Length: 185
Image (cartoon, rainbow, N blue to C red; front, side, top):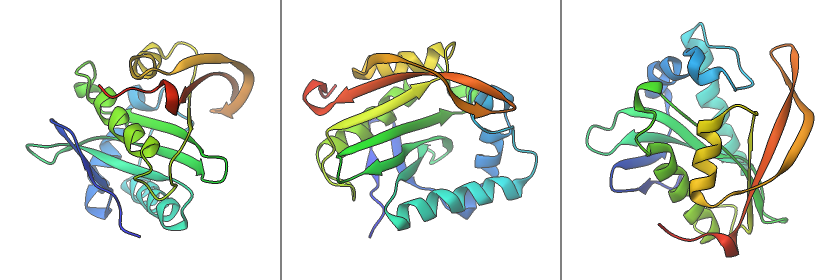
């Protein structure tokens, strides 16, 4: 199964590999990036390499996919996005994404996520044509909610204390997008 590479006017979405270790470490060692994440900030390069290996194995097993978000002109890795899990039988997936803080506020995440959702709803990924995509946010993560709303996700409710990380319970806002409600930008 070949990893699907996607492009937008400003971005290239491609597979992560070991040569991305330093950039992935930079991304996930930043406390601003991991503030709402179920990870502590990375302290060693080996953690980034293990995460890349995890993303690769998930794709190889057919249980999810994670792309590197790269600037098209320079190939610089600025974040990641993908489907943390997907269920081809149920035709749904769970979305995840992150971006280096010095690139926040430029629409890169929205652009990348829109592209992968379009591919998923069009049946261009190994999971087949999806009908529903879910995104969860921690209350207070307004930037993430903004990305989801721009793409057309609808807030569906609050799942109280449904997450546990960093030694505490977290409420999660559930957002959903149905293929019939999605429109290309």
